Image 1: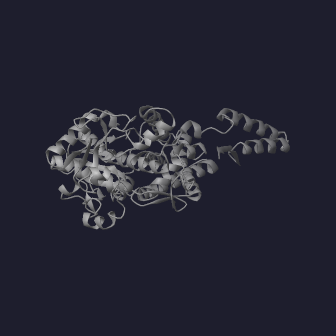
Image 2 (image 1 turned 90 degrees about the vertical axis):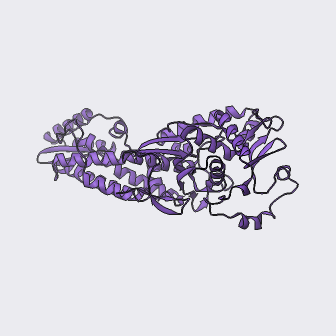
Length: 481
């Protein structure tokens, strides 16, 4: 069962082989922290979180780095509007990021480098590019000479001659930045400071780095010259990731990453999500509406990670229903384990089921196929739970049920799907098991006294509170709906 991945760089699916056996170096281009995270961020962060979890599940030691872009025109504009500072804006939205991701069950990365904390590495990389003839200063700016890198375009498949045809119509020759460049395709590595902007001292004068050089420097500083997986949204393939390759590989002469993985974009009711269309939804707005974070995870995982995904009310409703099914299975052990005489220890997993799950997911992280295995386990446990409630016994041995449940819990954990035990085993008004049993006892006494109106009242009262009673020859059993 070899793991194979679709590599954007080669445009084909390839066996996964790491630089160092058993270890994965993984970098994800994180968020620019000028606003709250939206549904597109939710999808990306869930996808890379689950890929990291899966790699760990199959035995890899994963070092996972995710950056924060905390130098950017959008951050600066927001700071100006709020009469604040770029640092204050970045700090506020980094804090909000961690709050949102915690609600979605995203595991924290091993490290979160920030561009402002990598200034020495950024300037060192620019200096090396300049020494090797790939960069040139121009009136306080420094630009990358794109034509000097012969492999430019290999990630995106774009060719300079093809781009040249349409670029001349879009270039404003009066633009001061254009006039500083030797070639229209060249891009900024360092930008000279403008009045009132934050700036850092450098050999080229006070200024700040360009966006692309930041990631190249952070990858190199934290993970080295060549990493195993470079991840990000499909919208970053060009120019950001293309430029990263040009910057890094021009200096090191080595591949920046063995595998380039890109997640598909999120649409809302078939349209691109944007504030101008009024369909822009932040993670916290969605969750504050009462949507279960686990339903959001499930929604994301029902689509192949490279394909676009359409966010609709119907899709979230379907994901919510799906989550309820898996949640019932996850809670099975807590609801019935004691009654079935399960021991305290962990049961062995169903080897064939785990193998089928792994074989499916190994095909380019086919998480929708993996979910099929989870649903099969969850539905079987739900069926057995109904039998226990209605007949007081099971059709399957307790040991086998424990193995099924333990397998579901383990595989669901790989996908980050976890049920809240305490919250899910309470009724809305907090009736305890003892209180329910007392009500049932009152009902039995009413029935013995032939006070059937009182008996029906107690039954209806419990039903209204989500508790169903089942009368049989062996007595009255109950379950929470």
